[in-house]
Structures are given as C-alpha cells and as structure tokens.
Image 1: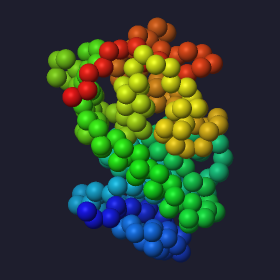
Image 2 (image 1 turned 90 degrees about the vertical axis):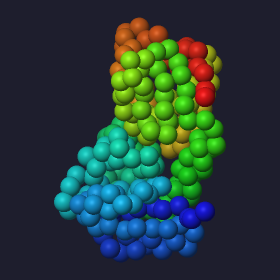
Image 3 (image 1 turned 180 degrees about the vertical axis):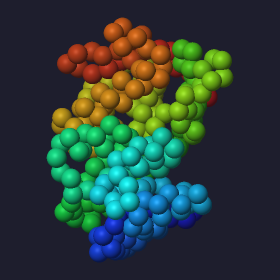
Image 4 (image 1 turned 60 degrees about the vertical axis):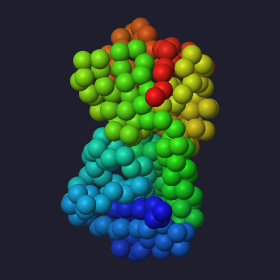
Length: 233
C-alpha cells in the first residue's frame, strides 16, 4: 500500500519546504503548490488524503477554496494559517475544515495532526459506508444523502463526520466532550460554534424543522441525541 498523499497549498516556499520535509521524513508523500490555480488543476489527476491549506494565497481567498474542497473532496482539510483570531478559526471550521493550525507552528505538531486525521479516516473505512434512517440513506463513500425519491443531497466531509457519529450511536446522548474527542480539534468556543453550524446544516439538508427537530435533538447543557432508527448495510 502506498504512503498517504498530503497536498500542501502554501505560497511561501520556505514554509512549504519545511512542511514537505517533515512529512516526507515521517513517511508521507507530498505535493506542494504555491497558487490555488495550480492546486485545483492538479486535483483533476491527483487524489490527496489530506490537504494543508494556507488562507493567505496570492490568487484566491483560501476560505472559499476550503469550502469547495469540503463539498467536493473526500480528503481531510487542515488549515495552516497566520490568522490566529477566533473568528478566522470559526469561519474555517464552519466552511468545512477538519482542523486549524496557526503559524508559527512546530513541524512535529503538523505531522501529528495529519496522522490523527488519517487514523480517524481509517476507522471509518473499516466499517460499512451506507446507513438508512427515516426517509434517507447516507452514502459515506460518496458524501451524499439519498431520499426515498432517489434525489441526492451533498454533504461536506465535516458534516458527514458528525452525521456518522450520530448514526453509530442512535438514541444515546452524545456530549460535546465526546464529540471533541471523537472528531478532534481543540475544545473551546470555536469548536462548539463549528459543531453548531454543522448540525444546523445537517438539519436543513434532512428537512428538519429548526424549531422542532425530529431526528437530531438538542439536550441543552448536555449534548445531542439522534432519535431515528438506523440500519447499516
């Protein structure tokens, strides 16, 4: 089995080189890009396992690229940015990033975060990728929800992670602390806000009434419960 491929989108050559060396020394394959246009062109023939994305790109806003990757790619997305403000972290996570690392960083930490994302991906791959509940079938290999009429709704990688967590533990309380442990990322306001947004988007895609959701129930001060019956196949 070939080593996991990490795509590095970083316009500063020195930082890109540091990341490439640290990851390759750890046994990963890497592909580096300095501009978003180069990276997007390469995606036509390249399927990375993890994407490291800087937000301050010379030819495109990194956040919009993160959003597109989250919608269209099965890769894990880690933002590596000098923007350290909470609102930047929240925006990145809301748009579908799986993790956020601020500059300056220790290369060993980046390697550890990449390994963590890949471990979570392998854990998911080791189980079935299709689950039916209510009027929906979730296809986690394709990141889509299929309705009984055959219509499909796309979900992002980040949204799929949360949905899978619910479907693997139906009718059981899932606390914020458990979500943070299972999905990774630093606990705190930015993580909680990102979870709120992902769950809100899932409810919308599932056609839930936001004032009276039937499937994903909020237990204030405790967490969430998924109330539907789930069949994995």
